[in-house]
Image 1: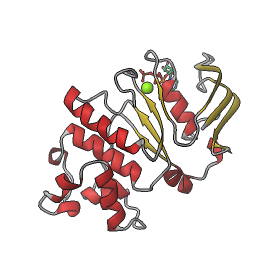
Image 2: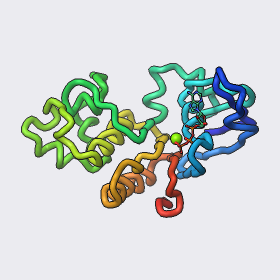
Image 3: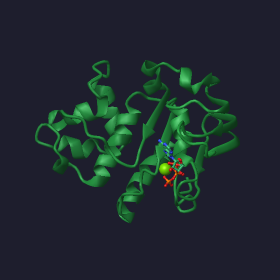
Amino acid sequence: VELQNVTFSYEDDDRKILQALNFQVYPGEQVTLSGRTGAGKSTIFKLLLGLYQPREGKVLIQGRDAIQIPENEKRRLYGYVEQTFHRVPGTVKDQITLYDDSFTMEEVRGAARIAGLDATIEQLEKGYDTPCTQEIFSQGQWQLLSIARAAVAKPKLLLLDEITSALDEATAADVMRTVTKLAENHTILMISHKAVEQNL
Ligand code: ATP
Ligand code: MG
């Protein structure tokens, strides 16, 4: 991941959110971005997701312009996890695959295992085929499910934006243990208010 001299303002606004920003993250590294609220951390992720074009400079993933990466390649290139889980209508499996039938059941289980949720899911009455309602998982388990959703496509890069900030301390620690495990074979760029305590 590389930002080269990136300057950025949102369309309807001349305020410079990012100014001449440079950084590189190399394969296998774990990097935490921290900074005050409104500093522009999530904006950096939106640029990496190709949602916006920088006013100046370049935003590169594996040497390619982020904005030019086709949608259908993005899921295998990087996984993006936000603070809140967005449930889709359907089963537990659907939450992980997002209806993409090309994922095998083995891959779905593997992703749940990575997230530390496989045993919890197996205990549900219909396992992976259980229809989802809000109550079947706790807030922390939903957050782990969003990690499974990101992991199923086996991306090398994970973008994690404040994934523990809505969780209580013990649950946040569970999620961070999962992230620490993921760090063994993923490049991780994460945003955290608590960079010091969450040092990987
Ligand atoms: P937090 O720690 O609170 O999540 P952040 O560092 O992630 O903050 P950003 O969300 O990147 O901050 O926002 C940076 C600035 O850009 C803020 O002033 C915000 O109001 C502004 N901003 C964010 N999204 C938009 C948008 N879609 N249109 C206009 N301005 C925006
Ligand atoms: Mg943010």
